[in-house]
Amino acid sequence: MKQKIALYIQPGARQNGFAGYFAGQPKIKIKSPAQGNKANQELCAFLARKLNLPKSGIAVIQGRTSRHKIISIESNLSAAEILLNISKIVNFTE
Image (cartoon, rainbow, N blue to C red; front, side):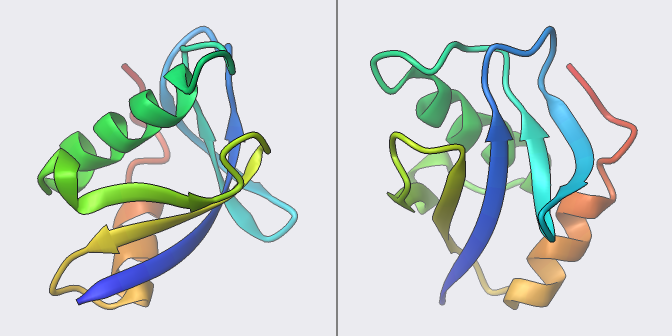
């Protein structure tokens, strides 16, 4: 099943990681700059690693040039379970 999740992204951060919430959305810090789709690609790869999903199952479907994004995640988990798993990586950075 495809789930849609709203996220707030902070590109150009010192390290990748979950950084709490901003405007009610999970905030993800990404090292790559917001140039040439690099941050979006790194966001998908980061979430794939942390959620143990294939990178091909995660895509930015709205907000490609915005910090506010909606991503599609192909998973058997519900949207609530995915958000719970994202929140569990609060203290994890890479």
